[in-house]
Length: 464
Image (cartoon, rainbow, N blue to C red; front, side, top):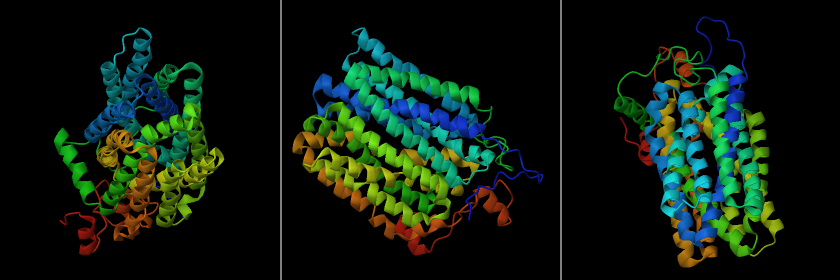
């Protein structure tokens, strides 16, 4: 069965012409800005390690960037739903470009004390959160215009992200090794500027708005004040046990991934003698395998059982990476494990994105995505901070083994919960289409699926 979002079917009975332009624009902007971010993810930690020699300070910088990312993202949903994600995307990317460009400029002038670096990093994080979210919100409408199944659209977005995770570390590692970390941060600034330009020029005005033709019956714009809009998104999310369970699970894995990427891998690269080139190489092979997994997911994921593929992907993507870095094995073995890990990870985001877009009405996407993403990202600022402190106290290998064990538990035990059965239901039907099929007026917010009382209690979700 093709998981096609049917909410975009025109009410007048005539299909709108197929258009690939919005999808191409969104994916291009994602590719450019995410690649710059991945380059910076190599350059910035290495800059801090090289100048301070402290894993703890490296964790502090990661915390200062990601804490504003999460906090701003949590509250920007009503703004995106009211102003539209296109406007929010290009303006916030422009702010990120200016802040990122000031870092190498001030460093070159000898005017970049550590406290000012933290300020610039915080501004970049606070602007990047809304920009990333706004691009995500435009994906389902772009899928409707291109007449793609949701898994295919989210799979292509996953391919884009994985390509950025492949190219970015490779470019970042090479630039840092050849020209120093400031070259990587300069590339990040240029990428943000180009991403802003693509969104502003290539996407039609109003893309992603609830009133767009892809969401017939939706309100012309969300009504009510900011806090009313915020409460509507929160009320919808708390009635969705499956989404809440996914968010909690992803929050744990995101914390561990942040620790891995921002502190554990750079420290491993320094202690093993591999240097920034080793960071780039492991990131490149992981990203390449993830691209392959995402491409397969884009092609066939709408025909596969979501729950089984999802947990199998996490089994490969998680704990093995931590364990292999803790072992004294040749680089070839490390790279082989990263290939398997990346391939499994490639299947995750297409499934998660399709489930989200099927269950959340278009006029609530900004608010629900903002809350869900911020909760899922809540532990990320602490990941680098905790990892840096733990490595300083206990050393690298014990921290890697503990984190790998926690990752395994977090991605296997949740599969026993009853709400995961909902993952394979409502496939191929956006909320508005599901409402129409059930006889509800178009544009209404459908009630979430009703689980047994025991399932609500197990999920920790108050029954209403």
